[in-house]
Length: 116
Length: 116
DNA sequence: CTATTATATGCACACACATGCACATGTCAA
DNA sequence: TTGACATGTGCATGTGTGTGCATATAATAG
Image (cartoon, rainbow over all chains, first blue to last red; front, side, top):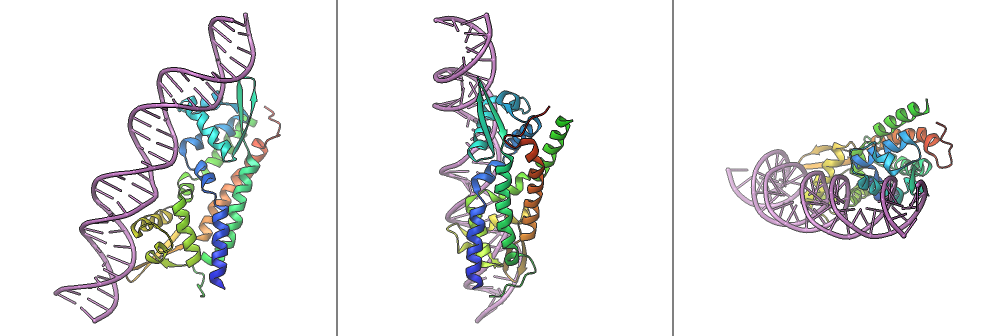
């Protein structure tokens, strides 16, 4: 049965570990965009780009990625596009990952007996 | 003061969001390696590679990345290298990220007033 | 000692993607 | 309508890195 449990846990973990989501979080310059978004709160592309050395178009693309992966939301205000981090959505994703890994620990924790 | 709080929260988040750690989690084939490790428990490179279409050398490199970033541990057994996920270490990293994002929610949650 | 097996590494290649420039689109001011 | 500004997109380039082959290193079997 342990083998079956492992397979189930593995599926649950892989489902919780969304590759595209984490990919959005592992680009250094995109993390700097996130830092700027936290510092500024809701802000337009120009203001966010003003906090980073990258070109505005590059920052715009990073913001699109963050929105596509559910880390940010946006709304139009005249000719400005206001971006904002979606804290609760990020938190939920991370909590799902935590729950999956918690179920993994009894199976994979170093020092745990591998009884099979 | 809110601006200062934002800067502090931003620094805390960026510290918790270790780019290298998440980079190890955002490669699809590496995630398949992780799936195999969960299914097998402690196992050598050959057995893990047997669960993936990639070459053994590729899997070996993925395992090195997982170990370098603290997601896995290994020990030598004769001519076999036994790899194992470090569940508690992964959990700790994720929990740090959760804690940082929890502090971020009151500042960045959609619908939250931006009083500054 | 020799042969076989397990793993890691050097190398070359391919592909994804971040980057910046130029330009198109859309919006407001006059 | 015209001009100025904000944003997004097409395109070309460079870099990082995943991938597989050949090979080196280590270790056991005979």
